[in-house]
Image (cartoon, rainbow, N blue to C red; front, side):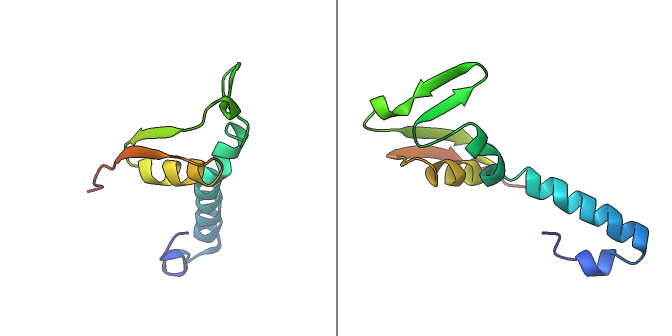
Length: 91
């Protein structure tokens, strides 16, 4: 995931630190997190679950730096009819 990993990993300690960082980044990817809360049957938030099979259309509203990746991850689990995604430009 880290594009310049080899250039940065100039010592065994730096390599270890970069590998730990990469593991954390991979674990935090929406496609690795969302399946714990979103299935083809339900969406779970805390102790509450919503049976989505009762609905014929599902829409999303997402904003922020992770809006696109979160929406893509959800759409790979459940069919999204349409939605609004606002992406912030990273400077």
